Length: 270
Length: 264
Image (cartoon, rainbow over all chains, first blue to last red; front, side, top):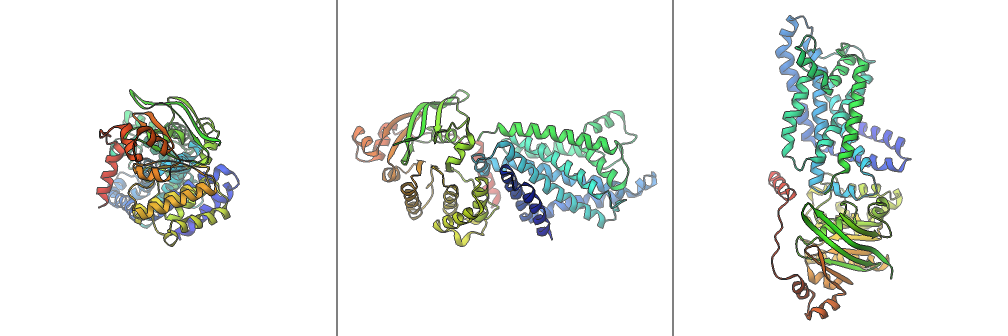
């Protein structure tokens, strides 16, 4: 089933872009990321384990208290946040994977090919974002299994738009970071001091209403807050910032990060 | 004969360190050009500049008539390259690595298929085309890289120590094919090696670089005559001296070592 899915996406991509010569290069770079994803079975299983654990531990652990505080079903509230979590961790990982290619040679093969640096970075980023989105979809199905129920089927496509935007934003961030990192040492540092704080501040685990001022200010500066909020709005129909603000902020931040990323990528020397 | 690579007063500095120091040379079209030198002499840095991945500090370069920094795509289509260290995707198959390259260089589909089959058969990897590169030995990877560099039929091929770590059989095999292409297609070969006897056998022109400067050049016989030696290796030692060069381990090497350990 997965293979069919990939083929469909690939065909859509190829038929839409096949004409333009630059697009062929972007397409093959994109395809490479997808192939690598489906081949690393252990990575897929590993990346499903963590969200499942979060859903079960938090969902059932806090569910009772949350309900007592008249918040309703905690699983309903939590699932969009956990989907967002799996999307960003996959996205950042695939962005940062660039370090691997930089160090183990494959990047050189693309850098001497007749394709611009911008297109290389675009192909990779789209590939990473696609993989992260697939991951988000998988976690969506897992959350269905533990009792999550989206309020409307018709808003699912819109939810997917938010998943993809969030994925694109964080892959671009990962790529930008990887452009100046020399080796994987920095990776743990970034996970612990950038990604985890962004996740905890985003309101993925708790409502942003009624928080201390500094905390809610910090949350509103965290781009992931808008991704989580957009997902929550489209999946369970409750929103803190409002759907249009979510969309606007995510788009702007994604564009800015893509611009920074492509600048840093163009400066890579190996 | 026409000149296909021209370099004038090329300099590359990394901070205070001058890796390539005001070198000038030219390579004739259709020649097999050996670029020799001890470790850290500036060979790889020069190749990186010629192949558009490193920006020179100053100087002029022309590759197949194009400027590597102003006409990048034209230069990139003109050459194929086998890097000193591996540049394959381990998690793709041999065929997929070839295909990736063919698509990036926009070789039309039918032609691409034909050439990939031809090249893989030549390097004797056709039977293993659907195997993952991570399962290949060093020699097989090298052969695959040589095959890959030729898919778009480049005018020039850069080989940065192409036969390092290969057995004599594979070395011979690769060189015979390259010499053949050199003759039939007038493909210019620009290579570096530490096997000086190999250079003596195949090269039509030799340049020796040391400490970022070109210290000798000519056809192998000329160099031997000039230095009054009987082999190119002796000539090489005479112009570059007998001191062993220190090369600092880069972050790359250390990382590579760690990954290797992790895989165990």
